[in-house]
Image 1 (cartoon, rainbow, N blue to C red):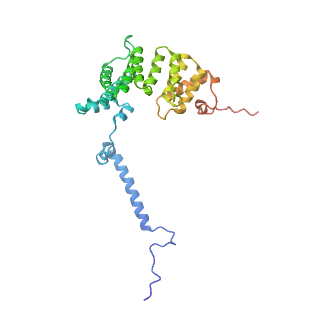
Image 2: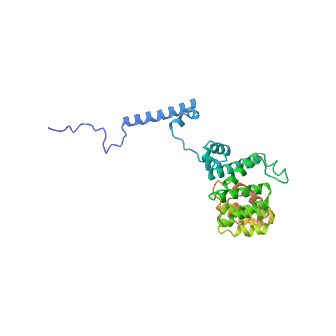
Image 3: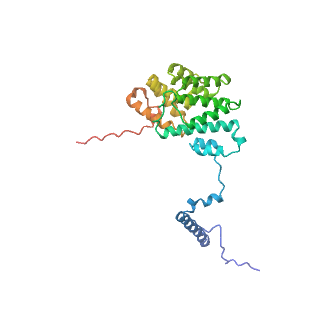
Length: 290
């Protein structure tokens, strides 16, 4: 039996044209997507959060809430947990930290106009009291002693109690000389107490201070405002910009200070520095042709 050689094939390796059926299907799918998108936008389905019930949501951790400045949510979440969980050393520390950040946000929202109104206690409020209460309870545990005591020292600095702050940091460093935050804030406490030279020596003695944005930031401000060594400040500010992680909230502030400093003391800045290298090119006025 002979095969029908004239039978037309639907698909062939030599065919260069796409089948009309495929084109029709693709066009129909695209039309459906467009129409559905318009429907969702106009009816507000996306805004109503209907898909939230369908797609699982990732629970935000306490640390993420604190990092994002959502202290009220963090406090509410902590206080909703069972009493046995709330009373743990780590929960007490986190709650104390959340209350401290809440107090700091309260002052910052008011542009610090009410800060230091009491000469004997600069940082006051029920949120501050709650922070200290929880942190002192957390410090009773050997697990959270160092972190809790360090944060207590930070609050003492905010209150203007520099001697008590230094004692808190010293107590932590006696147990663990490599506790990074206690080491950092001890240097800050020295500078707040007016011991600028001692603060610089202490901060620069940290082995990795040239690669630590927080150490560089504090050294920068020390040389800029307290010591007034502008050449050193320019170098430290440039180092900070090179090592600070993206999104660091101090980057815009230090950039502004460096811009101002470069305008007043351009001799302390070179073309290799970040603030100069990133500066937009100056407009060169065209010469009139005669």
